[in-house]
Image (tube, rainbow over all chains, first blue to last red; front, side):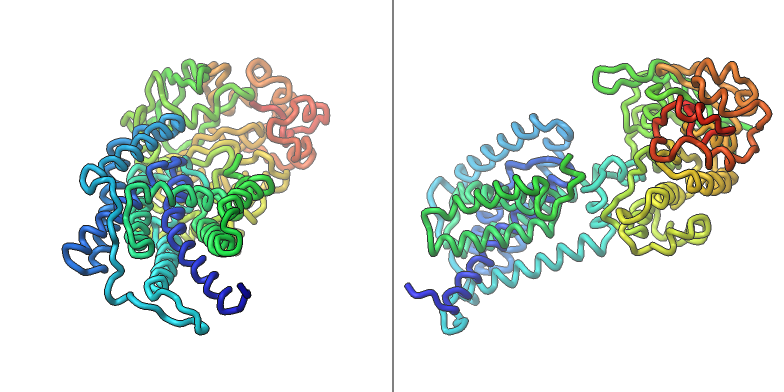
Length: 293
Length: 284
C-alpha cells in the first residue's frame, strides 16, 4: 500500500486515541506510585469496573454523559474503599502491597463476572458520536474524535488541579518527599485517600471511554490495557503526570504505526522502547533522577 | 522559665539497631537549647523521634505537657513544631513560594508572615518564583528555615543548619538564626561549636544514644575537660575558655577547616589548623 500523508495523519490520530486511553490509566498509576510508592496492580480493575458501570448506566438511561459520570464516580468510590480498607495498612511494605493489589485485581476481575458473566458485552457507540468525519479525505470515526477531545480536557484539568490547587501542590511536593510533607503538618492520610480515589476515577473514566472504542466490554479489558499503562509509566517516569502523557503518546503512536506497518513486531517495539529508556534513563523520560535512588 | 519540651528516657530503633537508649532533655520556653554529641550519637534520630518520623518505643516526649509519642508527624507539626531536617528536605521541583505554601497550615498563613520571612531572607524574596533546586546550598538552607516560620510555631527543631556551607554563609546564617531565636524557642543540633556557643543558652550532650550531660552553654564553653570528654579534641582546642557564648564565630569560621569537607568534618583537620573558634571542628 502506498504511504500517503492522509494515511499517516490518520494513523497518528489513531495513535493519539490509543494514547489517550493509556494516559487515563497511566496518569493515576503514576500519581499513586509517586505519592505513596504503591505499585497498584489492581489499577486495570478500576478501568474495567468503570467500563461495566458505564455500560450498565448507558443501557439503562441511554445517556452517555451520565454513563461517563457514573463510571468515574464508581471508580472514585471503589478507590476510596480499597484505600481505606486495605492499601492504607501496607504503606511502605512493598512485597505485601504487590500481593494485596494482585489479589484485588483477581477478586475485582472475578466479581465482575459474577455480575455480568464471562462473555463479551457489546458497548454501543452513543448516538451523537456515530458515523465518520473526514480528515484530509480520510475517514475517521467520529467517536474517536470525541475521545481525543476528552483526553485533552482531562489533561488540562489534571494540569490545573496539580498546579493551581493546594491538593495539587501537596501532591507535587509529596512525590518528591512525602516525609517532609507530613512533617510540615499536612494530613497525608487524607491526601493518600484523595490521590488513590483520583487515580481510580481517571482509570474508570478511561474504561467508559474505551467501551465504544472497542465496541465491547470484557472482563480482562483492564488487565489487557494495564500492561501498556505500566510500559507508559516506566517510559515517562514514575510520579510524573507529564511523563505519563508523553509516554502514552509514544506508546500509542508506536502501537498504531507499527501495528499498521509491522503488526508482528508492534508489541516488541513497545518493550524495546521501555528497555531502551531503562538503559539510558532508568528514572524515565520525565521522572526525577533523585527519586530513582 | 518553664520547660516547653520535655523528653524523658526516649528509646528508638532504626531497623534492628537500638539507636536511642534513653535520651533526656528539656527545652525551656524562649531559649535555644543545643543538642551536641559525636557523629552517630543519636542527635538527628532524637529530632526525628520528637517529630514522629521515627517511632518512639519508650519514654515520653511532652510539648507543653501534651504527650507527642505515638502521634503522627502531621499531628505533631500541627501542635506547633517547625522542623528543619538535616538534608533540608526542600522540594526541588517546586518554586520558593510553593515550598513555603506547602507549609501553610491555615489559609493566608504565608501572607501574614511574608514580611518577617522575606525580611530575614531577602534572597528568597528575590528568587520567589525560582525552582528551589536551582538555589545555592545556603539559600536552600534559608528556605528550609523559612518554611518552619510560615506558621506561628512554638518550637523549632533545626538539624545542622550549617552543614556543607561555606564559612561566610555560616556567619550570615548564624546572625539570622540569632535573630529568629529571639522570637521562638529552638532545639538546635549543631556541629559547629562556635555557632552552637553563640546561639545556645542551654546544652544537652548525647553519646551512644544516651544523655550524658545537661547544663548551660556557658558552663560547657568554659569547661575544656567536659568538651574533651564528650565532644573530642577539636572542640577543646577550638574554643578557648575565654570565649563566652556571645563571642563572634567570624574569625574562626573564616580560617576553619575547608567548608567542603565540613559536614562530618575531620576533627583533626580543624584542630591542626589551630583556628581559634574553628569553623568546623568536631563539636559533636
